[in-house]
Length: 152
Image (cartoon, rainbow, N blue to C red):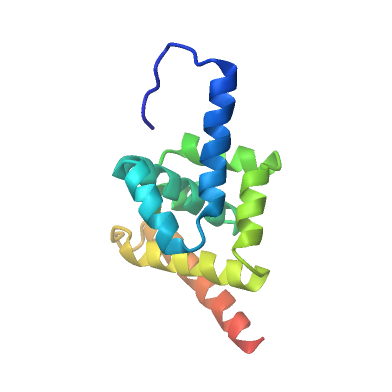
């Protein structure tokens, strides 16, 4: 993320700036408007950082291990741990975002689609290696959940 000035803002000014920021985000009605706003506001690196944190949260909530998440998203285990810790401490932001994403079935489908995509683009693993076995197991778990969901 970007750096901020070391000079402290007046607390009233800071409060008004945040109020305007939250209200602006809340007023955006569709994903296209949000996308344009975020792309104008944040650098690509900042966007990617936030998107990776959300992906980490989805994968952690689906039970994927740190090694898999780290390898597919190219993030450190300390980043995964920080997101996982927030989830375990009942971070309201992740809960609200999860509810907004829709029903549990839709969230599961979205998380599985993300995991499946990440699995397909991750670096190839040498046959018989630990990463090969991990990728094979994850692929099997995703396929099993998708079959189970299609029966419902």
